[in-house]
Each structure stands twice: as C-alpha cells, then as structure tokens.
Length: 318
Ligand code: SF4
Image 1 (tube, rainbow, N blue to C red):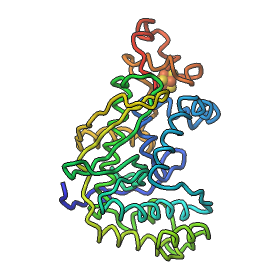
Image 2 (cartoon, rainbow, N blue to C red):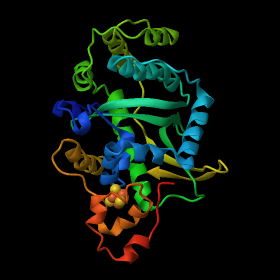
Image 3 (cartoon, rainbow, N blue to C red):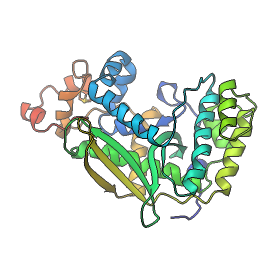
C-alpha cells in the first residue's frame, strides 16, 4: 500500500459500451454479479425495473442511506444541464470532503471514479472514516428486510462492490488519474462553461471556477497536494430496516487479482464480446424472486430443470 503505480489508464478504450454507455457504475456491476440477464432485462424493460425499485424494502433502504448522509452534511438539489455539469458535481463534492478526511473526520457519500481494466467506472462510497489504529476504513451500509445476514450469493456482490471502491479510491490518491483520461472517457470538453448553479455551488465550497477544465485542474492539484492514504479496511455493515438495529458487520478481504479477473469477465459483456448469461443451474433458485422470470428466455430454455433446484434455497435481494 502507498506505492504509486500507473496501470489502468494505459489500457484505456474510449469506444462506447453496450447501451451507448461511456462509463459503468459500481452498483451496476455489483448487480451483474447476481444475474447478468436480469441486469440486461432492466435496460430492455425499464418499466418492470422501475416497479422493482419501488418495492417498500428498496425505498426503505434509500431513506436510511439518506438519513445517514444528513447526519454529516446537508443535501442540496442542483440543476444539471450538461455532461460537464454532471462530472463537475462529483469533483466539487470530493473537493469539499477531502479536507475533512485529511483532518481525520468521517465523510459520507464520497464519489470515486477511475479507469479499471480499460473501462471508466464511477461509484459513491457510503462512508470513509478512521479506526482507533488510524487505519482508513471504507464502510458500505446494506439494509435488510429480514433480520439476518445475506446468503453467500448476495454477500459476494457486496464484497465485489467494496473491492471496486477501494481500487478506485486508491488509484485517485496515488495520482493515477490524469486530465486527458477524464476528458476522453466521459467525452467532456475542458473549455465548456459550467451551469450557473454549479458555479454557485463551487464558490459556496470555496472553489472559484467557470469552466470544467479549471475545475478539473483544481481537483487534480488538490489531490496531488493531499496526503490521503489508501484504504486499509473494507467493511460491510448490515442493518435491519424495521428496527434500524445492527445485524452484523463483515471485514472483507481484498484480493486485487481475483477482483480484476472477475471484472474483466463482466466487461466482456459490456464491450459486446459475448452475450449476457443467466444464472448457473445451481443458482436457479434466484429466478423465483426475479421480476423478469415470466419473460426470461434463459429461464425458459432451462424449463427442464428439476423442481428441487428451484426451491432449495432462497437468498433474495433483501
Ligand atoms: S429469471 Fe433467472 S436467469 Fe432470468 S433474469 Fe431472472 S434471475 Fe436471471
């Protein structure tokens, strides 16, 4: 840890990904670990996905996250008018939180981004804080409808998610992200004048800029002058939605080569190098709680699967 390395940016590809995407979200990749076919149906059938996201347990999870965020800072609505505005907002939020983190305070909803395995990834870390040993702890809060820890399949996605956050955060503090990478991958222009609300928001947190390029340079300069450490500890925290009580925590082991190998497998789909895959036969029990079960061709093609495999295990998303 702490060794400066250049790696991902060298192998960057700026070709659009499937569905015209320029970047992937860490939470999206985490969903992909559950069932790739389900993820794809979410894009093809957005109305079903929307209904799925409106389930009470999903809404309850969102409210708990927001309440936690409000404990440490205010949330202000900002009008976004361009791709540059959207990228600028993350940079401003990071610039606002870096000094707090440098002085040992806890920050929540910390944005991260970077190029991993040639793909631009974005995410938002739930919480960064220091433990009694002075180690930087990255914490991800997961809320659960049931008062129990998740099963292995779901926990796998959570571990993958925090691992990617660490890769992104560490690369940023090591200074691996360059101006050209951001401009190329997000197809944003340095000379683009930021929206009025973004400029006002930036000045409110002490940054006086007009163009996206100025903001980007201020951000990269701040990062290069900061002495933020890499993440030492990855932690998952599970809370019960009904009572708000803690169900349990898990310290996640970080295996970079395994994480990257898994990511490469998912990225193959996004680059159009292969078709999406449904669940393996041993995990067909996932289909019973899937909103796309009725229309899923992967499931239909496996209708010969013995009934016992449909019902042996339930590890739904809550
Ligand atoms: S029905 Fe099964 S294979 Fe199809 S999308 Fe849902 S979980 Fe995936």
